[in-house]
Image (cartoon, rainbow, N blue to C red; front, side, top):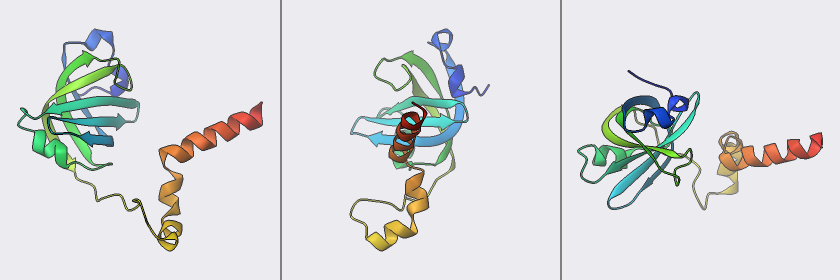
Length: 136
């Protein structure tokens, strides 16, 4: 049964869960791939170790790819929400294109793609700070 990321809590520790969502953040090393999965209710960190048969697929994912995964929930204080799903299964529903804004882009290109930059995490944080300042 597929659950929402917001349903992951102490009662799900040690249980196998299925999740669907989009890759919000992605980081890979030699032995583990970290995927922060986002759905309509929140985020959760998922990991795939190099011993997993899905390691190469997890490694190839890009931000905003849509996936369905299953794994065991574990408590991990280092994870963004305090919980981590150790992946056992991964199904790529749609692989996204590379994000067009990268380091060292021309000013003209950045202006053409500014609608994407406005949606970035940094911009959201700046907007939240300024709105708090106005309400004080």
